[in-house]
Image 1 (cartoon, protein in one colour):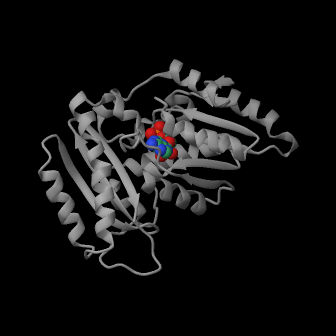
Image 2 (image 1 turned 90 degrees about the vertical axis):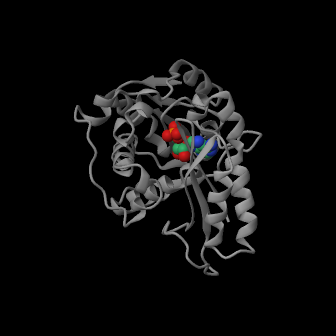
Length: 280
Ligand code: AMP
């Protein structure tokens, strides 16, 4: 596996790879890799001739300074893990290389997708995500890029970004990879205290119960039920639960036959904010 710290060296190397019609798959990450990331990479590896992974903790998408400062950094371990899945190229730059010495967000209009859910609670988050993903896609110029449904709103926003800017790249979503107890894998899980880690599977358990209720209860009753369940929990604090249309991400007020819906949740386990979702 080749490791590059600068986009000029990376681009030079990719020029060589892209000859002979070879396809390039790209998996952007913020590192502290886990099996969820690796599942994306393994899938991308099957579908492309070469795989590029990036590891870059993007400062402009953090609305919480402490979350950014405490974001886990495990680069040596990540490199070993990437070798186990035969990753071809790793791009692990610093901020100035990605942002050309000007680390600020651009403003995007994602047709309202950015104002729902995470957009309501994380100020400027999707401008930061849009800025870095556009830059990374323009640097790597992959044929396909892979994103997890764990961050479902992000996935929909990136599809919109690529469409609006006519980038010739296919965006592929992949299912959420979970721990055996159901907790969605996340780099932030390593920061949970023992008690919070033991409590955290309650999030997915509640999503599964909400899914069962979706078939039988009216759609506005389910969020109220979720709020009550979390009020009873001593260690977890619900930030939001909403049932939304998969395409528009707007909160569902009534259920249309041909639409697809998901339940989306954000929960504080102590200082750590966890998100998850489930298809209904
Ligand atoms: P991150 O490093 O958290 O920015 O995630 C990098 C990519 O991996 C994003 O597309 C995430 O949605 C995806 N990802 C993170 N956790 C999971 C998971 N548990 N299952 C599937 N994909 C994931």
